[in-house]
Image (cartoon, rainbow, N blue to C red):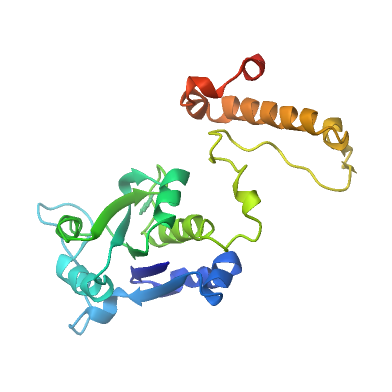
Length: 243
Ligand code: ADE
């Protein structure tokens, strides 16, 4: 997969050289390139923004600057143009899965009050380009860079070969079960006066599986009742309902 990130703060993306994503890049599983939006400007001040039509506070990023930058990175083939914005559709695990199937993703990181709306409109009409305005949560960041980090990490770990043991992707929170993950424990068996739940050291696989499912259900009910309510009715059996 190739990912291009366009930003006025390329250094913000430096963490993508670390850890799993960094290794995926070095292993050739992810071709990630970061571009400085200001490189396409032609004026002395390298201007990328201007005052909003209609008035109001803050500055808006200019469509002509973004157009030049994006025309330079969006290739001929199919691509997702992902625009992080608090007014976008919410990033979910299933969206990350969808994005992991894309050949190319271009991430346009806005700053200030955002990017002139004509940029998304224009590229929506370009054949092969799918524009997705995406929010990583109901809070406002200073720009799209942190959201880009989140999207790249969420997507890169789903690419074949990136996570060493693919089984570790199966039982995670927000995975297929639609539940939060159960609590996990390791050695030592007693720490700070707290013992590991007895069932986990019982060696009884059936009891362990039931206990984990019960914990996942109880956690989800307490922390994310919306997720529990969204489960298809057939997903809960009689044993589940007992919890
Ligand atoms: N830019 C500013 N806030 C954001 C958010 N919550 N999600 C995505 N991009 C953003």
